[in-house]
Length: 131
Ligand code: FE
Image (cartoon, rainbow, N blue to C red; front, side, top):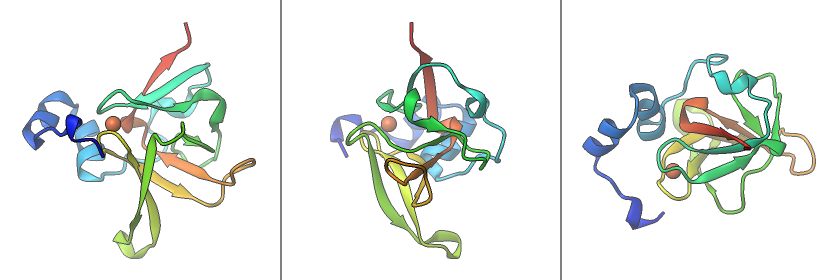
């Protein structure tokens, strides 16, 4: 993770909405089915709501039925993972590689070609349609 983007907790709290702060900086999970990005089908890019780094392209988004925006691949190197053993599960936590913000988790039950499911909190993402 880059030092350039290290911000104080107070600054994050100031710059993010309460829900974005809870997800990105406190490892929160939004309620399933609540993100408007679940229904986002336009062409465009999904960036980290914390630092603006582009994480996903719309052509890797798919309907997983989970209630969270899902992708089968991230942009190269944009998403870091680490083992998360909270809540009695072993999961791969997905983090923005640039700012360290919590995005969601990665599961090995996604579609081809990767077989991965990046299960994301919509609150951690910002969509920009292709112009
Ligand atoms: Fe970020």
